[in-house]
Length: 538
Image (tube, rainbow, N blue to C red; front, side):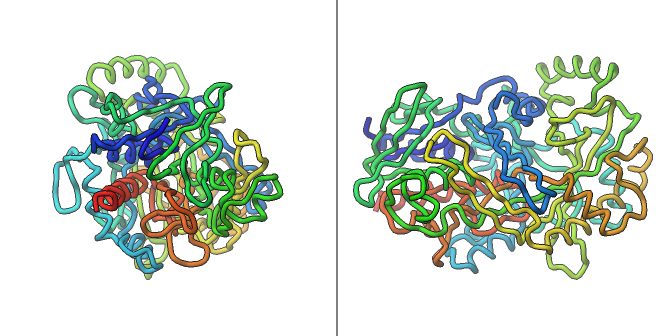
């Protein structure tokens, strides 16, 4: 089969690319996705993320693991990634967060011309259909529905009030370029009448409505195994569907959009990357590109949790179960109630030192006890607060574990390999606990979990962090954009040293932005789609 563009990966970036490129009826587009269509009720109902996140049976989830982490007492970390059209936007907490203006200005300062905040803002706005309407920093004409939360819990408002009582500023919009403060997250959730309260994954917003375009072929359950080259030009993709090996060919470009863990893996399987990562597996080199798989950055997350007598949240018990059954009916009829919750309802971007020029920690206040990525459940009711250092200094890598294209990638985030990350996380944990123990939040506490207690020393905090912290699901940087020797793609997202090949996903971020990564990934794809259209229209 021959197409103009072949896109590998139907996640947040791939859904956008397929939709935007196929807007031109003269262009033929093929999208390959290893998972399914992403239309299950477990994905449409926001609360269904609880079922997908643990990765049992790899239900909608690749459920990767890292290599043992020296900085985490030798533990292997867990790396859930979405496995369906919509990718991780199909199983995430739906939080719509852009990061700080300085993050993008920092990319431009690193040589990524055209990627400053002012350059990126039009594409955030283009993607967005914000429930609040359009204004200088928001759009209301895009495919991605962005909503205020349908029914946040009273305990979440108590968290916000407690932080405000400690003199943290209240913030109604975390996406205008300055995100310092505390408030409620906006979410990627439908607010139109037909689907109100449903998750708006990138596929649900962009791709599902256009699947019948005659110039767009969406092939699911199709695992890409290799990029096909003629010399140094990418001309197609080999993939496996069921037990059958197939090929699809690209007249113009192959676009890799499989995420920060699998995009470098596919390049390496195809002979693009460091020779030392490729040739030991018997794979023929196409182009030596030293940055492939390097520069892995992720947000390490530490959680504080409490038991509570309050049953008006998510827990395991008779009262809550009865309320949950009633809530299912309420969500089905009106799109509101606890089934519509993102779980992480409360937001905070704070400075651990007032002299800093921007927040260095992010908090997610969750209306449930969170333990080991929801893989360890607790009877009763509780609440949790995540804290992470926003701009980690630690750098890891992604590498091949074998030549088998169906094998998981090797993932080594090297968490806490830079001691500055531990220092910031300890400061952040202390500030977070102060908020959780302030009124009116303190009134909800029945018992603190995991052995955290008053007057802990930094050495005790360190031990807690090393023994329990893990990712909050924001890996980036492994095919970084730039012009230096370790850059994998140009500012146009073309892979250096070869032709007809781009990477378009979170892997191209040269540095991790100070926030969640889904909205920025969608923005990246919107921007690149316009670049491609302009290039081929010239």
